[in-house]
Amino acid sequence: MSAPSLPPCPTPSKPAIALPEGACDAHCHVFGPGDVFPYSSAATYRPDDAPKDKLFALHRHLGLSRSVIVQASCHGTDNAAMVDALEAGNGNYRGIAMVDRDVTSAELEALDAAGVRGVRFNFVAHLGDAADKDAVREIVEKIKPLGWHIVVHFDSHWLEDLAPFLKALDIVTVIDHMGRIDASAGVEQRAFRLLLDLLEDERFWVKVCGSERLSRTGPPFHDAADYGRLLVERFPDRVLWGTDWPHPNIKKHMPDDGELVNLLKIIAPTAEHLQKLLVDNPSKLYWPEVL
Ligand code: 0GY
Image 1 (cartoon, helix red, strand yellow):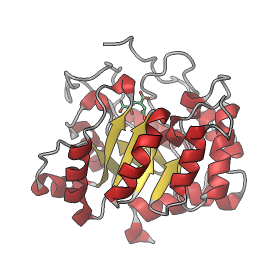
Image 2: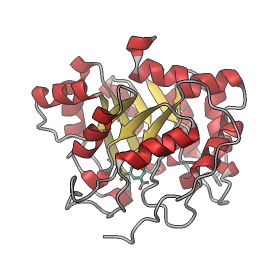
Image 3: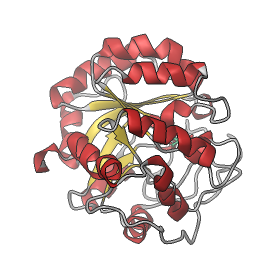
Image 4: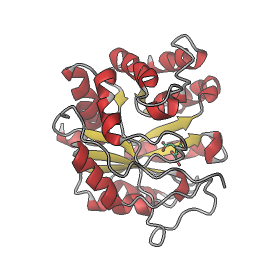
């Protein structure tokens, strides 16, 4: 088990920009509390508890009224903490689960009823073994009837290998954290070119968050946010954004969540782009019934 993550910023600032009505945090987590929702024994890190009430309070503070809670690896495929938060979220919270390859259709339907709309797969070295591709294929075939999508989280060197694999799955695919490219390596770096190529395929979406993970210059993470803007300008209808609260495995520069919202001035500088990024795009994937 590696060193513990830093705790999230205890007093995030109030954002300096007003967010549009219905703004969605499309990437955040709940952790525990561990005495109610135990952590996985296979987890590569042991987080501080970050329960739903703290997440809800953060969203109110930042002006975010909807959210997608992404199952984090520290809970493995036990989605109970995430589902508990969705159930308390009055329809304003959706979820992305992690499931085992032998998941049953009844289990998937129960998750769907709770508000889950997709499954996440990790190919990130510090989170443990990469997802098994045969298992991914099997799970994808099981979730297609539900109209779900997949969320893929990978270290950028995986992109070359994963691009043809993901295309062949033939399902809407959301890429986490701008493909975890190295913000210091420039727009001509191979991983960013591969990401752009993949996104030419309209089944692919990308989350333009994680600047604090990609940045090599540190706060205020502008070096990484510039890539977010490029993605928003080029693929305005298939981008999502999230806080990534409570920021697992951040060991050096824990971001102020209000400042992460302020990065949207760089990432989505026009009102039209901001509306798509925070409201219209999440609505298409997570609340199509209200469109
Ligand atoms: C993130 C990123 C990380 C962790 C997880 O599932 C997870 O534990 O996603 C990370 O360590 O980079 O999206 O929260």
